[in-house]
Image (cartoon, rainbow, N blue to C red; front, top):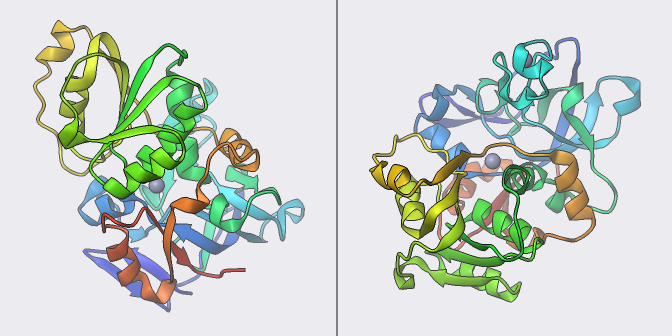
Length: 319
Ligand SMILES: [Zn+2]
Ligand SMILES: [Zn+2]
């Protein structure tokens, strides 16, 4: 099968062996997949990953239990043991023995076929297209912010970073009715926000005034935490959504002095993300800038790093 793999660099292999599913796995034929910042971080050494990359996809179950065959699905990425202390206490995303699709110890979805535990499958309802379904994983991660921090309407909230994840987090926060502002670098993304009634401004035009109740760092950069510290009020909260290969060197004294709460935030609820898309609460289709056939993966990866493009998709077996 065709696959995009990271060895010591990204390579395209059109003769990769098909996945050998273990008991409890389904095999999904991938229609579309989304390129995400994490995929780029992996190419710079994040998690020391080797294998087929990719973790955002929609596809059809080709092998697996009878009741799933032929179903259009999206797949949770954390593959867990269901037995360890974390799994038993309902925190299976933190399973101590987990593998993560295309990120940690398990092949990902930039390939014709991907093996996924059956428990990780969610059926994609007819109300959402493949182009929308491919956003379920990152949208779920965006929704995790409101799961972890209760948002009230009177709160002043800033999202720092207007990339793919920043725009999803901003749209999720906008549904809460809080006083929201997106602070970013890319004029096109800021325009995307303004079209949806979300206040947005350039970071270069934003004075570092420490008056926000909540700041969400979606910069994907080691500098994001320092920027967030500059915007959050004393006793306020910072949510960190950025993962990067490079460690960040930040002066932590302001966190102590201003008694700031820092919340790490990773994967989120798939069912909520599917419902939000089906109810049209979040607009993801306008975030798709370009789509490339898998053979044109190198152009796709390059395009996904260009500031003018928001989301870039790989067409693997499009319907
Ligand atoms: Zn991702
Ligand atoms: Zn476990």
